[in-house]
Amino acid sequence: MKELWGKALGIVRAQISQEGFSTWFAPIQCAGVVDGSLVLRIPNQFYAEWIGSHYQSVLMDALRSEGLAAGVDIAWSVDETIELDLIAPTPKVDAAPKPAERTSAPVVRNTSLNPKYDFETFVVGPANQLAHAASAAVGSAPGTRYNPLFIYGGVGLGKTHLMNAIGHRILIDRPKSQIFYLSAEQFTNEFIWALKNHTINDFRRRYRTDCDVLLMDDIQFLAGREQTQEEFFHTFNSLYHQDKQIVVTSDVYPHQIREMEERLISRFQSGLVADIQMPELDTRIAILHKKAEQETIRLRDDVALFLAQTVRSNVRELEGTLIRLAVKAELMNRQVDLELCKETMRVTMPAVDKATTVEDIQRAVCDYYGVRLSDLKGRRRHRNISFPRMVAMYLARQRVGSSFPDLGHRFGGKDHTTVINAVRKISRLVDEDESVRTAVDAIDRKLGL
Ligand code: ADP
Ligand code: MG
Image 1 (cartoon, protein in one colour):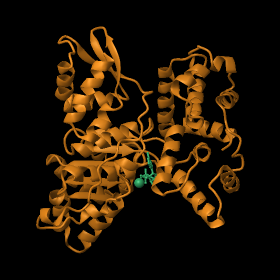
Image 2 (spheres, protein in one colour):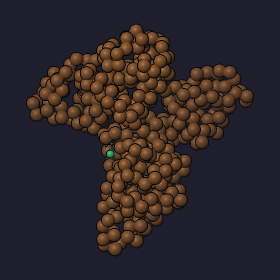
Image 3 (cartoon, helix red, strand yellow):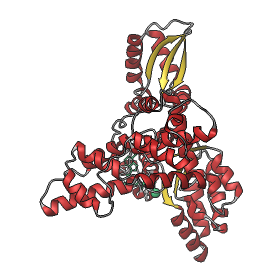
Image 4 (cartoon, protein in one colour):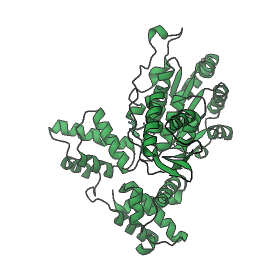
């Protein structure tokens, strides 16, 4: 069956774009035939939906032509332990269309996309997988299924990067698209300026008619700005009814944006809402390597591990630390090695060389909640125990980065799906529930940086 799958994949690969193949098919794992269905393991449910609506016939034809029996269907099975590697290279595109293709008005807006932020430079891991998959989907088929796309997450976690990547991707197939990428703050300023200068009709024509894709960054800026919200609401509706893609980012979940009109919030929620979290250890390491490669910094594995373990606030900070180290090394004519790292970081982070273990975390959590270690690793499901257990799993994943199956093992032989669910649940609660955030922060602080 695996052989059949391999051959069918070859046929699919020949028929669809390279990017489509590496995004949607490369991560799939064939688990053989179970109960009369060919079981295909995918990283998340989104894959089943996307493949079902875009590649169903290509895939089925390929499988049948390789001899999949007529009665055997596909069964998707979500396996969140599938780690998505760096996504495959995307062909580079020129932001501006070639002169020959140019319509009457030059594409001004497209230049506002940041050339550095494309899918090629974005590292995918469990924490940003959904947002990435959704962005890739929107990038290859704007204005269809996931409209609007709402991406939310804390600062420096890659929202702006993904949004720009969507813009670049759209321009590959549709080089003439008018892509408006701007922050909600810029939108506000332009709107106010248009009101003052009596050019509101131009403003509206630009945003409601000329624009093909609206990428609006940091929508939380509109909090409390009633008139701009009103304007944005109409812009939104107008684009939406023309099936033009809208992507919005925010630092919080739609409902948590302060002083935002209910009708706008419900518009945001009518499409796909995808969150983006702080990447866990192995993704942080991959990001560092990617960044080092881009900046031609020689980065040793031990240094990458050390930095990834030490800097856990956000990706921007992580990158910033790497760059600062590289600059310092150059100025002092030294290597970027562990010694330099520790010297540099000890100034701001006192306890850097004490690596935390899963056991340290379990103990700290037990202390905090007043439960016994044996209970934490045991089977009891009472909330007094199961909640601290979930918190410990979450912290262990964040800080030590062990794999889900390994963590299951260290928590007394739990299934990896139990760990995945725990990590998911606590990451959500850390966002949504003040008391959980406080507890997690307190334990985190106790463990030191
Ligand atoms: P946000 O808009 O969420 O505040 P940004 O998109 O500006 O964050 O990301 C901050 C920095 O971190 C950028 O330089 C971006 O390229 C980088 N970054 C964030 N996530 C990733 C990732 N998964 N892979 C590569 N770089 C990333
Ligand atoms: Mg941003």
